[in-house]
Every structure is written in structure tokens, then in C-alpha cells.
Length: 94
Length: 94
Image (cartoon, rainbow over all chains, first blue to last red; front, side, top):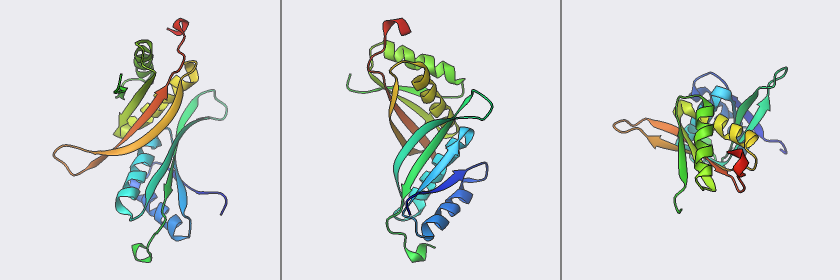
């Protein structure tokens, strides 16, 4: 797969997104991007840490911060993208 | 200076921390760390972006995410550290 899977973190509880990430890993992706915007950035970091702490092999390999403009406004919104790798997700972790 | 200056982002408005960063740069530091914990992470990212967008030469060179344990509890809190470099702060930017 050339493009990486992206899990967008919104306002739900962190574990919802952790499960989404596990699903992505189980579907065969080796890396994924956890993306959060504005006030969801803190939650995105929380999700990445939960994933790293609880899923064997999951590892944060890169963190990027960017800005996005909101359509129809000159205001910029901060965005975080956390790249997580899982080189050896075991079947029994499903 | 061997240790880097750290600006800790709390609950004030982002511009308060941008001014703090400019003061650090003006005192002679070439790099500084913007650090935010928990829900202040989003604000820390905002501060870093504001700095990069508005101060000539300021550039985000590294982003790290970590966890810290709260004393007396097993809960972990996410932490972000953003390293910003300012190789050529002009005197007139003061």
C-alpha cells in the first residue's frame, strides 16, 4: 500500500481510537498515522501513548506538527500527525 | 549553555507563551523547548506554530511525545516537547 492509513481523532474517548488503530493494523498495515486537529491534539497524543504502552511492538516513529487553514477564514488550526509502526502484531493480540 | 531553555505552556493565552519564547531567544538561546502536558498539548502546538509563522527564522526542528506519571497515581499523562530553533533573531524583531 503506497498511502498510509489515517486514524482521525475526534471528540470520543481515546480507547475508541486505539481500537480503530488495532483494526487498521490487523487489516495488514504496518504503519498508520494518528491525526488530530485543534483541541483534539492532546487526545491524539494520548491515543498514541496508549497504543505504544498496551500493544506489543507498536512504536511511535515520527511526530509532525502542521497548520491548516479553515475554509472561509484566515485563522490557522494546529494539526498533529503521529506515525505509529507495528512490525509484528501477533494474531493473538486481536 | 549546555541545558536548553524550557517554556512550559499552561492555561494562559498562546501569545503569552510566544512572548516568553521571544524573551528566551533575545537572552541569547539558539534553541528552546516548548513543553505542554495533558490538555495543554494543543496550546503548545499552537504556540510553536505562531512562533514559526510570526518570528523570522524561528523553525520547529523536533517534536517529541512522552508520558509522565502523576505522583501518587498510576495514571499516565501525555507530554509534548517541541524544539524550536532561531538561528538569526534580528535585533529589530525585539
